[in-house]
Image 1 (cartoon, one colour):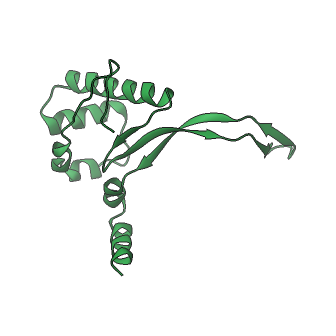
Image 2 (cartoon, rainbow, N blue to C red; image 1 turned 45 degrees about the horizontal axis):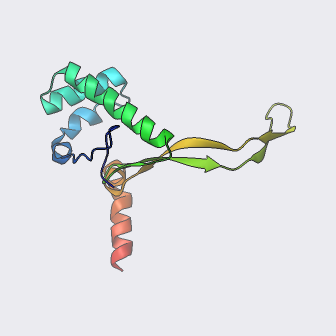
Length: 134
């Protein structure tokens, strides 16, 4: 499924630049907020921070609109944003221990892609590859 804009046109995105990101810069930060992310992407892509900020806002808005409509946004190698329905269930009030009914709801979900998982935990990716080759 190709990403579509709000007007319904298909877009093809070249993600080749993401493979060239300077990993040590990102690894030197244990946490990153939106401003730091914008700065890092601007440095890596040679775009202005204003352009990156506009692109990030547009990306987030597009993902939110698509997921809200029940669709999904899939970026191969990175992951998939989608919505899932949770069934009604019974929970417990942790303070009193009283059973509480929790209504059914729809929540956003992100499922990490294989390449993203491999970057985060290379040893797990190697184990999975070794298991698959047996």
